[in-house]
Image (tube, rainbow, N blue to C red; front, side, top):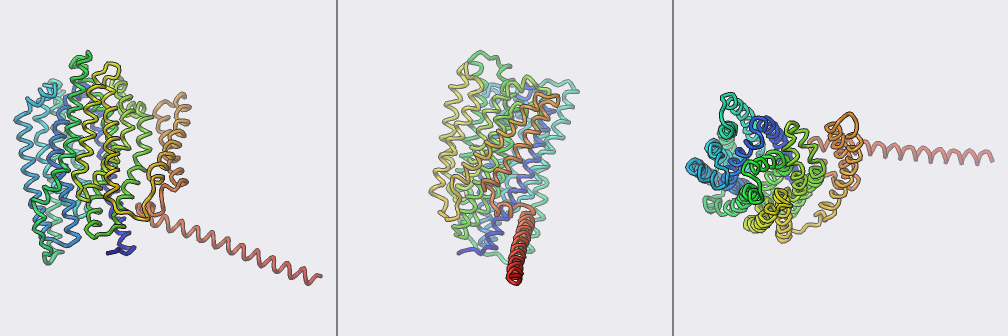
Length: 572
């Protein structure tokens, strides 16, 4: 069944509004996260952040296993059944999801508490034991929050997710800094100070879960008043369907998380095999994960909202059997990802050192370690963003095994190269970001290959030039222009910070100009932005007025010519 143009516009608006809401909240969350890192590294130093990040990586791995696939599966099923108005099925899916999430959260928390010491010993960082205990409750609250976020996303409601992320980030910042400051004043040891700091994260997740529970209670009361009768009983869409979709998604995400954990262990252990002490290896790992990795992760995380908004929208289009809408949504998401990630990837690679110097000005030794590592990681931003988006497209089509295959190949690539490169004295810790880049390229190529057989063909699809080549040309020209501004200012009395901000401003302006000149951004893209329709209507009105004036002037000129000819004839 074909949709009319108004329905298509509403579908596109829903997708873009969801992306914008989540992107804005993600920007704020990441800024808060960087603000959190700055006082933390002053309290803990690179060594203390090594303990902190060791515990956090373990927590992140368990968190991914517990929550990566189920929220996606939940939002996908709710969106598809909402399209068919199957309200009984939605309620049944929600009950199943909550029971699974709460069980996983409880098991994960108990596991982390019970095995904190053996886990810390296994990763070669015994002093991270207290941090693991402090972060364990966060696993339960994150599972609860993820269940409710998936529920709201299935209804295309992205604002509760955005607000809950902000609450969690603010809780981590305020209470984490407060607890760390208290521990330092009490004269606690460095591992214990790190544990106090990480308690702030656990409290932030509790506040986020409490907000979502209240919001869901209000939302469900509203839904009950709007839905008079249940319809569309699909018995198959329960626990079995939820787990069948969620399991491969969880496994593919877990592969990546476990790979990061292996990466941590490889950095710690392989650096020791080439002559570094445990303390030196921990300092290098702390600088890499505290300075380089958060800045690198900032931009791919801004692209993640595209996939979060895409899954329920694309799932609804698939339920409608609308091939044109499916192709348009997939095409728009990939193009938007490339449009954002391409210049960011080049910018981080070129300006890694000034970025870290501005953010962590007091940690010059850590910056010297992290800056070249961040330059290499910057090249991975484009591929990391494409992985997120292409995985989301495949998952929307319930092709959940294919991302698992691509992630497995990428993980294998990373582990092999990280092992040999980090253990090579001439490469050392640089092997970590190099192996990450190779992993991301591998996964992206395999995913794009899979997409060719999944997305319906459409005459309106953009070609490779529109999606990849034109953004690459615009990004290169913008970066070259920014360098031409950065270098002269750098050697003046204004200093590096002014030079960097001037260069970034020039890069953004040039990229916008080249994007318009090369027609990377279309009028449809502008129309879906906030106030986009008004901007276009004003532009069209001005164009029409100018055209009318030109036509009027030409008509007046023709009339004058005719009158002149008549006068000439009369004179003769």
